[in-house]
Image (cartoon, rainbow, N blue to C red; front, side):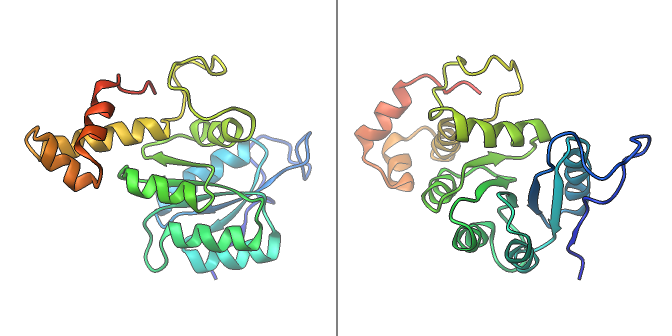
Length: 206
């Protein structure tokens, strides 16, 4: 079994004494990319979290049942069960669990489906630890993305919004269709006038 709780690993030079000043929070990390997963886990540990680490959905489900984490970071595409299906299982285990989905390719269809299934947010890689943690806090404490840059004043490290993912997806489809709005609307599964209204809006700010 490769899944493990890495909370007991002391950080170099940290004078490890068991727990940080605040009670460490268990946070499930499920990603099949070993390099990304290892870096993320280390970054979470330095911030006082206790990462529960899984490299596939089955391991993640076992860890979630055993340790009942309140938050999870889940990759969209993994061998076997997808991140979306894993999300459904995690919500069944704990209806209050906050889950952030990560993906290497933004898709508005997947973003909407992830939100429908209960995800807190849907982020497109590359993404750093601060962006992931900000997604949890924003979803828990702030209204839906406004796209006007008027958030908490954190500067350039804001998380890409669902509106931004949608905008970029529309632009890719429109480009694939050579700028043909009617064809793009058919591929997107929306009415031509609806697409025109979306295109009239400014691109959402990140």
